[in-house]
Image (cartoon, rainbow, N blue to C red):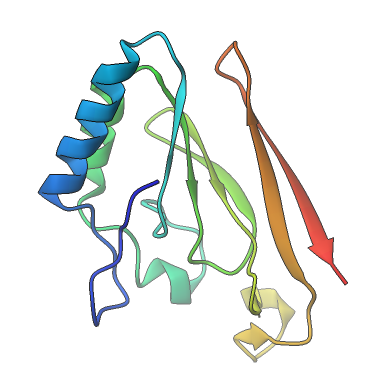
Length: 140
C-alpha cells in the first residue's frame, strides 16, 4: 500500500521515496511472490470529469515500473467513489466503491454525489497463478 496523496491537493502522485520503497520491497520478495500495488489515485481515465480531473500524476513512470516488475499482478485504487475495472500497462486495475458517498455517473442525473446510496467495499484475491479476482459488496 502506497500513499499517493499530496497534502492540500486533490491530485495524486507517487514520490521518489515511494518508488524506491516499492522496488526495495519487491526485491525482498525475490520475484517469486506475486504482489498488488494499492494507492488512492487511479492512473487512468475513468470517463467521469470529477475523478479524471484528479488522477495520479506521471502515469508513464508507473507503467515503466510495471514493465520492469512482472511480479506486480495488478493495481487497486480508490478515489472515484464508484467501483470500476479496467487495465493499466497490461495489468488489471480495480477501483473500489465509495465508503462515504457514491459518484453518480454522467447519465445518472445532475447531482455529482448520491449520498443516499449504500456504501460498498471490495475483497481482492490474488491467487498462485497471479490472477486477481475482486468481489464487491454493498452495505445496506
